[in-house]
Length: 153
Length: 293
Image 1 (cartoon, rainbow over the protein chains, first blue to last red):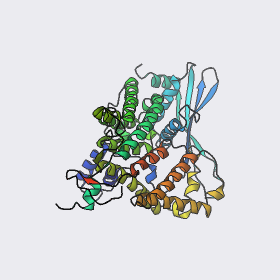
Image 2: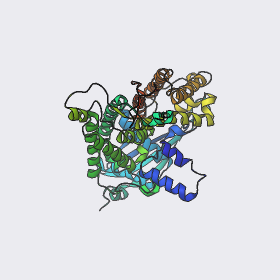
Image 3: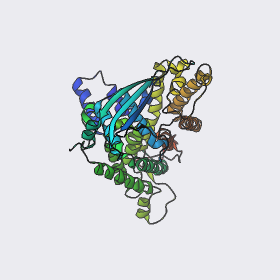
Image 4: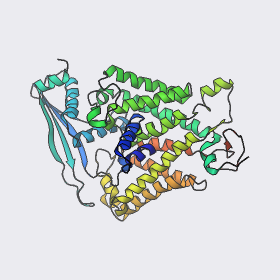
């Protein structure tokens, strides 16, 4: 975090108008930051995201974030960063974008895409970690996917 | 003539451009790799997965509906600017272009970037854009003198101080925040960190990340971070704390897949490269007493 960003984040004692102007300035000049380094404790919950793609011929594949990409973890971590936010801040806009992208990545007709997210609590230190809790975050059929993949019709 | 205060000397004295030049070359190289790896991720990270500027990041985003071709062009522009900056050709324009382009690109999906990316943008690129980063070891300097200049020219210190202060304060602030939590002092922080399967490169046994070993490692992390934040300002302690910081960041890079974070932090240490100690005031050209960095 930049010192400007720190100052803006700790300006609660200033009048609201000044705070707003400070945040706007920080925003414009790019001194804002989303940085987990500035948290008191490491995040305990392990997050994961994957999708099941069901084709019209009855076959199914599972999409996961590829750890073995050309750019190594330089590329992998960006996807993981986004996916972690997407799991926690689930919105149809965010996940619909993923479904639309997956739908454009194949020529085989798709019947359904289901996006799953999981969260695993850390458990007590030193004890076996609990099983992750998986849930369906978004479930789209062929017509909804067609609309997503072809936003202009 | 009044003797300049230590404050004036520290911020507004002249220092050799060596640290800025080396930092420029390394940061340019890192940004080149950063943008090359991103080029192949524009689709989907900066297109399909682009975030809503109003809902997610406030009100500032360059052309929210920009087509993919434009976003690809921005990344290619960043690649070209990174090459120019590394070579030191049209350095000032190239570095400002890099800062603005990285800012625009990150705004399309800030969720896809982490602290290392923001340090690269908000501290290193901005600091180098403000600085005479092309004054030494650059094509720009060669074009000015038409010969290779081996002695670094003197440049104003304040832009290097901008970078140094941010790095130092970053470490101090993170320690202060960690002291407010329970896990770093309690010895369980590494247990939680190594529980993130998506980011760890290997599993570690529970005994290594829980007390007493976990406590020692956690406390050592705090000591190193505080040591870098404070000790980097003193000539005698600087080499030791920087070596400790290098070991810490190499260990983080070896254990976690967190992209550019460790490499950006290591690059930032170049801002603390030692140099000749003849610090002179900007306009008076008065040789002062030796000053640390």
